[in-house]
Image (cartoon, rainbow, N blue to C red; front, side, top):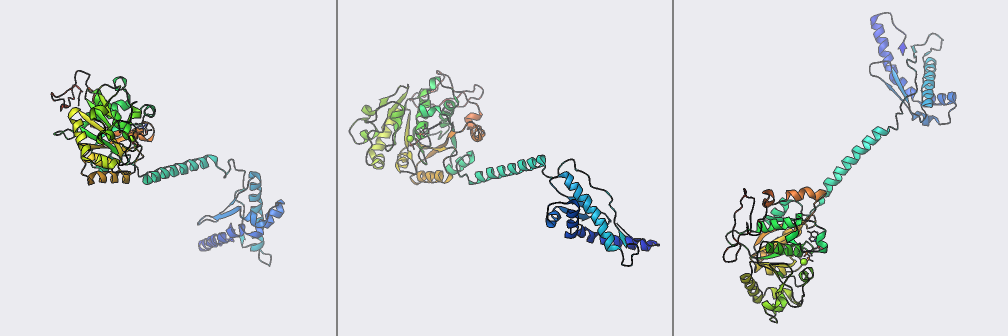
Length: 439
Ligand SMILES: Nc1ncnc2c1ncn2[C@@H]1O[C@H](COP(=O)(O)OP(=O)(O)OP(=O)(O)O)[C@@H](O)[C@H]1O
Ligand SMILES: [Mg+2]
């Protein structure tokens, strides 16, 4: 737009200023109802003036006398027609407004500098931009949810958590293996699967515990039910038996005994029977189909398991077995459910505590450890059970590998086993160059 120019430079400048100020009020005029109505009438549109107004924006650029008019419409042709008609009507309207009553030439003049054309691409929708924004938001939301889930997840999944809570070292990380649901016992002589290797590593690591007084009566327990205690106890015993140790596996779970089922044995004569004096240890012990593994089942379920397990007779029985076997592995109950496991643990050389990966809650594990501490039971180490080998846990599984995993230990072949003359396991040293070790 322009105002009537002056003859001097000062007047021209003044005129420019006036034009710029007018532009601001003209921009409002452009989006006003009168102009909208005139445009509707001219084009014969079937919409209301406020509706059209809502689709029109006019902006004046700073320090210029230009006004940009934008019209949004679902039809690009109609958008162009509205923009052009609106501009024409605006020019006419300004002429009317600025022409003095005496009919002399108008004080200001507006011209259409650039007419509207049809836009090639729609302003909205913009599918690519929208998809990009959608993906971005989705990603942010996804990351947010994952972070939130991790913050809310109070289960034990990290090596540091397990170590810190138990204040003990990790002696093993047992992978999740569906096969174990069908058959708990691993056939070690023919099995080199990851889970068999994991148990061999537990066996190896046991030799590093309490080097001066190696634990031989070991209670296997956990915080809550279903953490893999029985499955782990069976296979630790079998892994030890594989290394030519003479092992007795005792079912110290007198509430929900399972060992006899997993190892195809008869239950009635067992631990409780010997403790009640109804049978001798010799009569109660059962040979298994696995070489080197003898089992003492739970015996008939007694009404007072805690009392029986805390009896002097129980302590004597454990010592008797200790004298006859290289290892006494005792399966037991969950620590948070009943006191049986803590009572058994107090009479043992040490305890291995299981924590089911992504299942056992930190507080549960902490309470379980407290219950062991309260009876003075020595905690030998912690074992991660059912660690996923694929998906989110797979990385962790590798990471949770213990010292033996990192040095890539290879079990010695039969014949290379080290046995002390007294039948106790020899304290072998790790021979990195030969890559062999034994328990
Ligand atoms: N490493 C494993 N991979 C896959 N499944 C497993 C593994 N260890 C145990 N399980 C399964 O988990 C379930 C619980 O195992 P298990 O009976 O050994 O636990 P538990 O702690 O002894 O239970 P409870 O507290 O009842 O005595 C069983 O169905 C078992 O087959
Ligand atoms: Mg069990």
